[in-house]
Length: 319
Image (cartoon, rainbow, N blue to C red):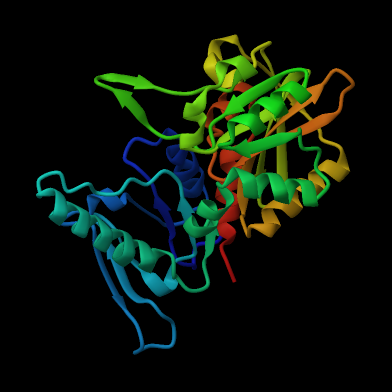
């Protein structure tokens, strides 16, 4: 067991059961852990970072009420589901100013740690979340991408829908959405040309030819380890009803695995959750990547040792 290296930094919200699973595995490996959430900045989270006066920058510490970590000694960073402070007690201009200082002060420091492994680096996560960039990268790597159109042109959208047997609409990015006290979300949904009107011009929309699928596949890559789970449901968007799902662990064709690993390498990501689907001929089709996707429930459902794989990667750390 490695016990003489620096801590693993886990950056996430307070209630994160997936992070709890990984921390449990890290504890089994005797790897020291410091966990915090950026929203705790203040008495519960202190940062001091020095630049220009030491060989490794930044130098300094992050401190919580129970732990402290030297910035130059952090082994790895598990960037899970952090939240940022809103400063609701301040007037709106002051809150906006304070929030920006936290993101660029604390965030900027955490983005610059020397020699550690990020799973994943937040800025790389951000880059990889853009679906048009994902689609272009997947196509360049030879992954089978369904015909897709991103547009705010009504005529172009109607023409695309007319050119394909069935088309679905997807959001370009999931965003928290509420009307009053009601939380709303948008699933992948079928769309027809006559449902569209001039309001499409307000913002780009993503339309995609519907794959005649028999199952979905969630692929979780952790370092060089590839875990694939087939999800059977009969639903267009399996996220709409988790009670309707059944799971089975599967293997992927070697060529497909290599392309998924190459995809993550293009974005310099150590991990990612891919969504694929399988058509009636047994062929795989690319859908999307969530660079920081959820996977905890898959371990519960299948017994795959995902949390152990993450702990192994984080314990190994960077150069």
